[in-house]
Image 1 (cartoon, rainbow over the protein chains, first blue to last red):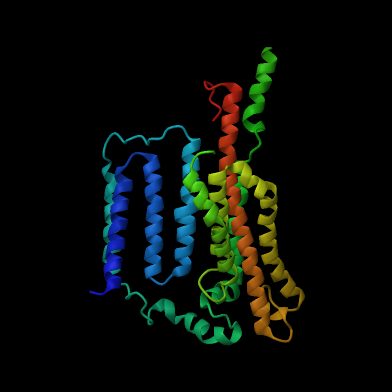
Image 2 (cartoon, each protein chain N blue to C red):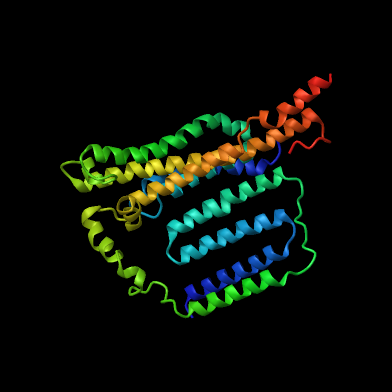
Length: 191
Length: 155
């Protein structure tokens, strides 16, 4: 067994352990911290898979900023503990187990990781690999595809992120007037 | 804010390197892993770390939320503007070949550099905006609680 396989097994086992921990714990602070750790280990998995771009994003967004935003939300809400469901529900459990079993069964049909003859590699990928050095001449092929061949897609993604920012600005706008003004006026009337 | 000596000292050491690494990822994205998305998030994470250690007011002095809101839009406009510029030069939308009439490959390099910068600016600004809005909310709730007393539900 080579080192990469051992590292993969350790990382994936840790992911399972953390997921079980998230499922069992009822303390929201601990759940948030565990999901941050989950993201960090996921970033390691991406690094092992040679997807360093994705690992960057996962470490910075998933482990860093998402955790801080979730903690900020916990500071905003009052109850630190999730309410424990009174009884075990079998229908959601059945659906989850059935979906998991179907996915495990379908895994047998997947091509091995990194195989060059998969359907995904047969379509436009050979064109990119052959033409990008002449047409774009950027050493990082991922950047060439994202920024040039699929520039319009990336523009759409940036627009999505921008829209998310605008949405948060609308939802959490810091105008105190929304909550405070009617109350103040009421107090004034009583006086 | 007086306490937490070790995080303060450590973050003071680390924040310049985090932001520098962000810029490295931004402008080295053509050659190594990374690009605008990752760089924007890393720079934003550095500033958020600063806000966590030194307080929201200090961070808002460094970058005011109003400015962040403006550059959020400017990044997207820069990206879309490159597309409009290439159309004005007679090529398709976002066909960077048109940016340099003599050397299309150089035009591609320029186009990728500019749009990646637009992506990075927008992503960093959006991340900071979301963080600032969440953190401001907490301050607002505390102010209202002080104003109205603890018994009133201002949430």
